[in-house]
Image (cartoon, rainbow, N blue to C red; front, top):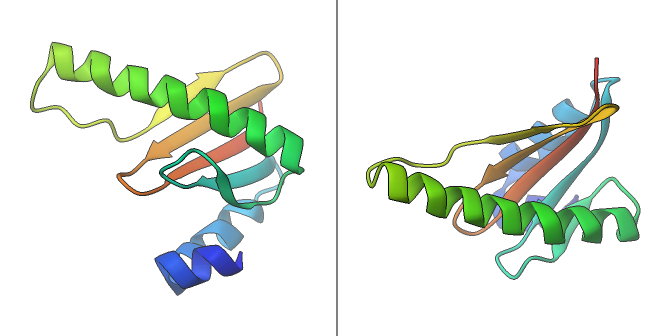
Length: 103
């Protein structure tokens, strides 16, 4: 989490720590603007897979939203599967991905 501390400040690190304290959270990933995981609590292969797909999906969702409402802004995307959920919080410089067990 050193990268989160250096680039986004202590508030980002505290937020990631607080999110990961939840028993249902499997992991968190901070993705840089190039699509590479900067900070993650998941293994590198899983993090890279989530980064690639979730970043592309959030980009397409943002484009679709802009076509529907030009003034709209994408705040969060939630993907629900049988066993897991993934949340993507996009930003201009970074994306935050949270992977959870479905409750």
